[in-house]
Amino acid sequence: MTPAHRCPLCRQTFFCGRGHVYSRKHQRQLKAALERLLPQVEAARKAIRAAQVERYVPEHERCCWCLCCGCDVRKHLSHGNLTVLHGGLLEHLASPEHKKATNKFWWENKAEVQMKEKFLISPQEYARFKKSMVKGLDSYEEKEDEVIKEMAAQIREVEQSRQEVVRSVLEPQAVPDPEEGSSAPGSWKGTNSHVTSSSQQSSYLELPQTPELDWMETGRPLTFIGHQDVPGVGNIHSGATPPWLVQDEEYVSENQQIGPSYEEFLKEKEKQKLKKLPPDRVGANFDHSSNTSAGWLPSFGRVWNNGRRWQSRHQFKTEAAARNKQSHKEKS
Image (tube, rainbow, N blue to C red):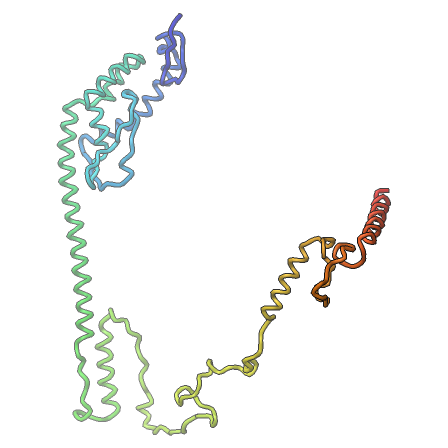
């Protein structure tokens, strides 16, 4: 009997020996698998002439499945914070182990011989890739240096502008002496407007313009109308109690209690508990507020209520018969 043969491409077990590799199904699965791997190999071949170096990111840890070797291969080559794109795949394709596994795979699966060279990298091509990788690293370092210089220039500009702002604020402004020069309101206004216009030239302060005081040009004297204090009522400036601390008349009484007392709350809580119990329980109708002597004992009549035990027995039978009679009427 022919031994069983497990085909990893078709994922089935066959008992027809090695003749399965010539079947249409196997050749179709083989072609589809090689077409899935071929775009990644072609992208890696493009990197031989011009290697690309980028800053390391977690996405560079991706792996691709090598159909010939039957294992995962790192797609990119990372070292520290730098990554060479497609470096890991090119290193694997140029290894002698991959070449040996590829020859075995092509022999076992009877693939097209012309396609074998597409999945192999010669030592000359890999040496060319190493040279382009060195050039890529140099160009990457140059770009990083340019970026660092640009950032340093921006930092210097920001620091210079900050120092200018601080210097302009700390510089003492010239204030006109009232004894020197004219004391007319017009001349004072001209000097004030000159100082205001010079201070507005610095755009970084962005202060809103204050309206001009025209009341000084009219020459009309100001009239004092006196203090507007209400007699008998003080304010916070005169030492009176602030209005937000004055207690309203409705809440003047300190002994006034809001809501039920704690004892009433406990009684209501006990009532709510008793409502959940069955109404015909033992001692449900017992009067706890009745005055009894120290030698009081229950008479056991109608269970902790009043009367004798034989009376409660007859009364219970009567009530049970009435309940049974009522239930028969409801069923009928």
